[in-house]
Image (cartoon, rainbow, N blue to C red):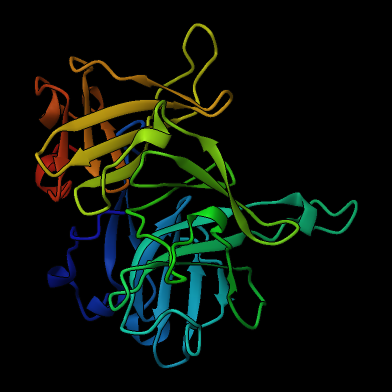
Length: 296
């Protein structure tokens, strides 16, 4: 969903601005679709998107709503009142969907997805990871285990990636972790860069992002669908392909014809005419809408 791309100014009495029409883009094909979002009065403000679903937070009802923009189906999640570690209006840095068939009754094909939120406390600069499924009364906490620091908090994460029913989070060291729900919600390492134990970089001078690669499987069938982008304070940028099977990484060539927008959106330049001819590049803190223009 293009968050800044709207035509509310063109609304008519039969189509009030409260419907908030937004443009959705298929990142693989460049196809677009205009969809009316539910009204602010009913759903509140937009939080994040995950696996094509949208999250809203309604102050009036103090609930989080999970919305399918294609079917308009809605699920209700708990609010944030009283949740520990969320003092000082925390920033939501990532949201994801975890589908685990172990939460379904035997023989029942219906699986209730869990929503995972990564929030960074603006007061303590530490991370709180929450999870809940529709119908829960409150959010559960995902244990960060060895990532916990001396003051009881967790170092901030820059963002995560929801993919194929799993949710992954990168650390500032370049590790990739996956959220597991059983027996209790926790994080597990799925990839760690070589020399990880010798890394002395601080969370203040490097940011790590996971983005979808949108690549088809290569000749060996190795494609886990994600890239790790590391942005250092001196503007040095590394793009690595993540191989979850063996926990390894390979460097993406600098001449790779790929344009990446951070956080959370990746485009192959040959899908969008306005980007054809531009060398592969990582755009940091730049709006994707400014580059797509009228190409879609």
